[in-house]
Amino acid sequence: MPVAIAEAKLRGGETELTLQDKINYHIAIDDGFKSLYGATNAWCAAFVNWCLFQAKYPIDNTTFFDRRYAKARAHGFYEVRGPREKSEKSAPLVRNPLFVELDKPIYGAIAMVTSRSHHGFHVGFVYAKSGAKELILLGGNQNQRINFSPFSIALSAPYTERDESGKTKKRNGSRSYLRYFIPISYYERAKKDLSNDGLEEMNSDKLNHQMGIKNEKPKNSATSIT
Image (cartoon, rainbow, N blue to C red; front, side, top):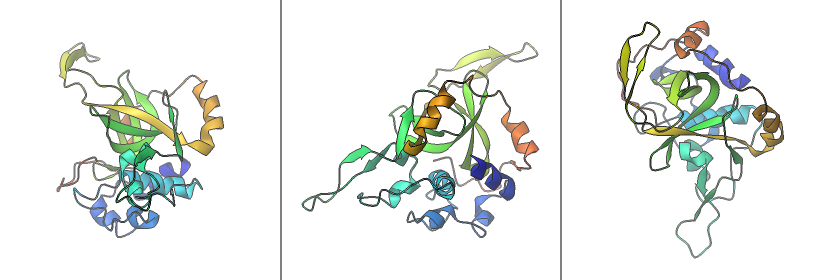
């Protein structure tokens, strides 16, 4: 997490179009992609893997079929194509042996934003909680930059709630939920983290402001969270 925080502060909310002239996380981890910019070049997984690599955690299953491309995919923290037999054109899907899944979030865990069909489509690092229904993730490719953003913890139908002033507001609910992973070599330390009191309550807008991260909507919003 210290690597991700330092990088977020350093980049200050710079958007991907110009950020890639200074650093390209795809190229840095050799995942086969060449650009951060554009809807087909999602870089959330590349950013997480880059941070892990800087912290000396392994990110590459060197003998696996899609070893490069897996590093670019959010779902790759859970599932990858493993070793291939000579007679096979592809390889079977297997659990990524570099990571272990947790039952609940801890600070610094990798959170995979997961669809109703159970496919991961975005990843970031767990930083804090935001109310009872959301966690704040520090991640890349969030509003085309590295920032703090809230994500729903669980699937939910549309609902209404009252704000601090007592006014009723309609909420859309959530079409996604979070799953949590850590490097397998961090698991023993994570056991201690799992037994503590949990995550702090924070506000993503305040966090971005405090850390000097600009977070206005980009003029060209071609890239979505993927």
